[in-house]
Length: 299
Image 1 (tube, rainbow, N blue to C red):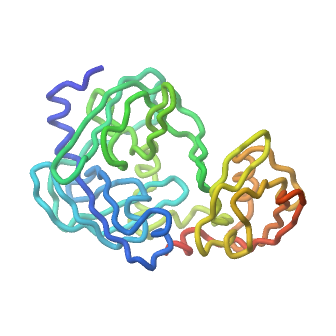
Image 2 (spheres, one colour):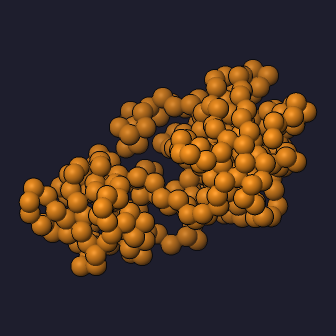
């Protein structure tokens, strides 16, 4: 599919450019930086905007620029760390709300396109198809099930809309994967649609049970989970874990993949102390690591 001119004309006014400044002291800054930019999607005629969480994490406000070049301020009103979406509310409505697809019936092979900001009032679009709808886990403590994979390459900044041929919002673009047939990862819009009231009321998914978080970056290698890095000041860093440590087990349960590790870790509530067995410098070590709630850590 080549996104038709009239479809783009209808969709692009629903996108905004987001510019964010995060205080240097915020714990997300060592990883994400203090100055960030992204794309947002207008989903409400009153000025509600959905984007991806990493763009606005640590910020109270964002500068919003419409496709017409109009600039104003939006408040960051909600985060969902588990799914990766964030919600902003603009000081006034600019642009047209993009309709949200009401049912979770996205099909493999379905034609889609991505619209994204490339700075201020500039936008780009790319088209492709849905190549998979399956679980995804990232090198930080994040997993999404299901996630939408598409052959459309994200043409700009993260947080933009994934749209069907009827101009309806299917998801929010989170990551550029650059894998064969899977160039972009979309967070299903159901992550916002189905929990909108709760997110707007509490600023988070209050009904979701808390889960243990350690602040690790890791990958799977030969049936082992290897620590690639740590969030500065997070539990794993404070406890003394190091990049290169090979995780063997958690509370005496063997782990072989990153997804296994996440699932085992998240079965425990935040605040639980977990015993990690790992291999470092020809030695098997054990370390007790008190977990925390990721929402509280980045509050």
